[in-house]
Length: 225
Image (tube, rainbow, N blue to C red):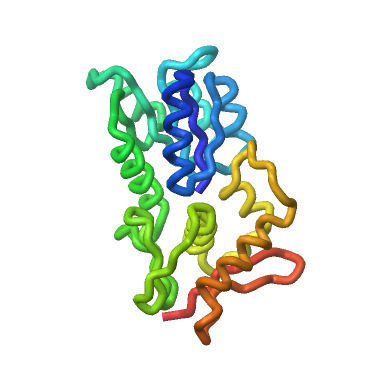
């Protein structure tokens, strides 16, 4: 999943980015409201973490403007103020949730998972396709009840595919959701990771779940019923 983190405190921003990356998220970072809004307008993020007290343009204004533009990406607002009035202002500006500083990193991760669940049809948080089960909270995957070991990036790619069953996913869409702007690697990285997933997810099973749509991209096939 791809996250936009808008936080002007460089130490906190670096810490959050490292923690999110370790959990498989692709993270883009902005340090002021103007830069954050520009990134949110041009990139299809899965969730935005937005501080209220920002240089150049505060988080409340950024949030309101994004909602005015019908950008409905879930927004988790960060605030150093715990007053009811400040929380109300954040939610009224269009934020989906808020977190008061200082906070535990585990709570931040839990809030992000909760926001992603709101976008999913399965409110349990588990992603299930045939006998393949992915648990974002526990960071586990199994097929036919057999655990499967994935790297953080493989996990992120599989989660993205499973959140979009039976939908054509282009290579560009994968890059937009799974890799951040600062990634520097091979141009065929998506194909490489798809091959790795196939070996781990499909190779030993008759029912193949990851389909290649020649010249277009990929599809995670969810059988009916």
